[in-house]
Length: 262
Image (cartoon, rainbow, N blue to C red; front, top):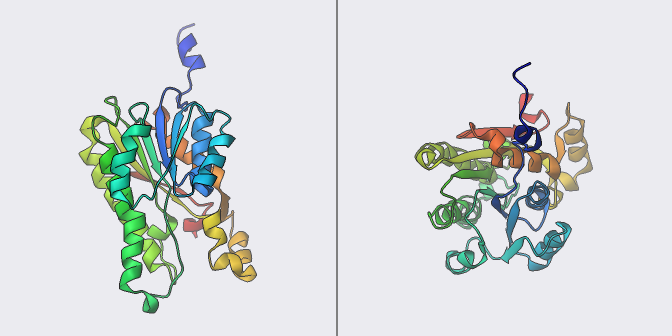
């Protein structure tokens, strides 16, 4: 009978990241760490960025192949340091990038000051775009194209009291993604966002709701489940990096346990 799978297609998964070099920011903890580890598990050579050198070293050790992957401890808001250090740690042109680094807070709008606006846009938006622009240089990004994934948030889609700062910076990434997807389509570079809901991570552990048992219980009680794990988001990142998502660009993948469905 015709229509059977060839030997090559049976053994090569479209979800594999083998032979791809992937850069992950925020790789020292939380979603960034989970994403770096899953990328490594799927065969990628991973360059892990973060500010905390000790925790980055822990992530590197967890891959089981510290000689194969690389780390770079750097402040993503320090453009001069990135310009000087990045070319030296990239061993091959990038096939993908996941930007997980960011900051969050719950702050009533009446308390928002100029320094808060500057800090949040510098960290959550400007750092992401500056890094991406730098990495998209032909010498650093694969001629075959690839995938860029920004971590946005359901707060970029929905409103919540005290989330003006965080929500508008994450919304900015959603808007940028759509235009970048069109601009870089001729180079076969895909741009997508992932918008997680509430995920158990060091960032969420420091949030106001995590220190309030009643608020945390309400989040956990929302059907089907509004409290996820970092691995749930990492799996979505790997999908968008892989060839299985080759026809997906300019999109936002919501990974929120049904949070935005209510």
